[in-house]
Each structure stands twice: as structure tokens, then as C-alpha cells.
Length: 165
Image (cartoon, rainbow, N blue to C red; front, top):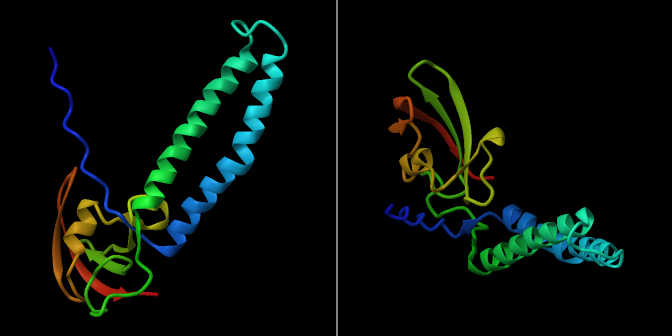
């Protein structure tokens, strides 16, 4: 008999005002636009008769379950998040919301913004406050060196600049 996997660590509750706005607009769109459309499509498919072999009905019900699941998640998440809408008292150190410029040992420069787990996007340089990189950066200042454990080994970085905008 297999042991169940350990529970996932709880995500940080912090979010930027832009992230909160995005989650709220997604919830509103799902609740006011998408769900009524799918409900109408399911009702039309159900009116056609035999539901056991009606692909539109079966797919519509599956889609409705996915929408309802996402609505529950967003409602719960929006009730527990903490919006961080101002920079910290010490703007020279790295905290939530900071835009950080780093240089690795090979001279490559990286730009990151530390955001909440709900709005992280590696493609735009937004990293979650729960990520190993962000955890290594917290409370550091310009000129500090950090060591980050990565899948391909340990990397050294130097903090070039810290900004909040």
C-alpha cells in the first residue's frame, strides 16, 4: 500500500493590486458570461433527447464542472489574499513587489519582479515569492551576493539594483 503524497505547502497570501484585479475580472467573466453560455448550451443539448449518447450534453456538463471548480477556487482565493499596494519602509532592500536586476557569474543580467504565486509568470520575469530564487533574494540589498540552489546545481548572483514602481 502506497503512502499518500505529503500535502502541498500553502501558497503565500500576498498579491499585487494588478494581480487582484486580474483574478477578480476572471471570476466575474466566468460567473457572468462563460457559465451562462455553457448552461444554455447544456440545456439546448438536453432538450434534444437521449443524453447518454449526446456528445454536446456530455461535453457541456464536463465544461460546467470545470468552470464551477475554477469559480470556487477563485472565490476562496480572493477571500484569503492580502493586497500589497505600497512599497516597504526600507526601499533599498528586497521585499514583495520589488523589481530586481541580477548578474550571474558569467555576466548574464536578469530582471525579476517578486509577486504572489497567483500572478507568477517566468516569461515576463515575474517570480513567485515562494520560489527558491525569491526566497534567496528577500532582505538582500544592492551589491549583495546570493547563492541559489537550482535543478542543475548552485548558482551565484550579485544584486545590481532594487526598485519599487
